Length: 252
Ligand SMILES: [Zn+2]
Image (cartoon, rainbow, N blue to C red; front, side, top):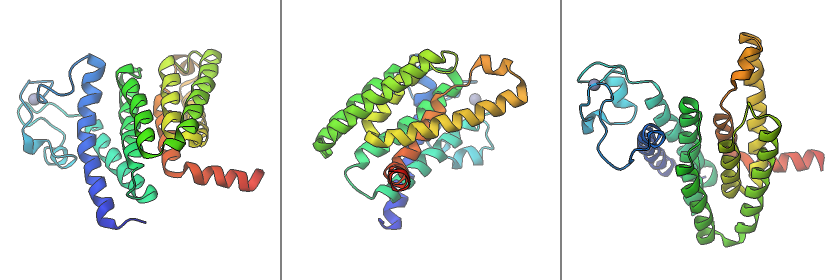
């Protein structure tokens, strides 16, 4: 278990990354650059001041409103920052301050931003998945080349499994989800199996709850699936090997 100070530093880095992920989630679906210009209020166009850009704190201090025009700032912004910070800290606590964080931290960031984008836009952008897949392979090659065969097999397996699911149930899943599952396999290796299990379990429970509340018509509209894949991905990154061990102890 790494010491608390190191975990806190990684967690704070996660808050700052989360702040950037808000920019990515807003701009990538709109085809805009994530590097420039500086962030502006979408309502009044005023540039966001540096001291109004502190993760979570600024949103609370301004009570969720733009300082210039008072337009509401969605709670999604501090939420993305908080979840990214918590995910970074949890990954560091569980996996240790190790070179593998070069895989697990970008993976956690990818899960958060993909969930945020899919919830709003119903897409999983290739502009994020392609570099994420390349990074997974390059980072494993540098950190642990012996893991590459498992990563590639898991990526291909997860891609194929979701492809079959998407063909069988086109209303619930798209090619974005299929490619996302493939990318998850590249990062997680065999841990993508419990990750997909959690995703399908959570998706089924929430899907049934929505049908129960809103009737069968709700089912036809479809529920975005990437947030469930993201949830499963985080569980896989935090506890994948332990879940696999638990299963093989009980049943194999
Ligand atoms: Zn404004």
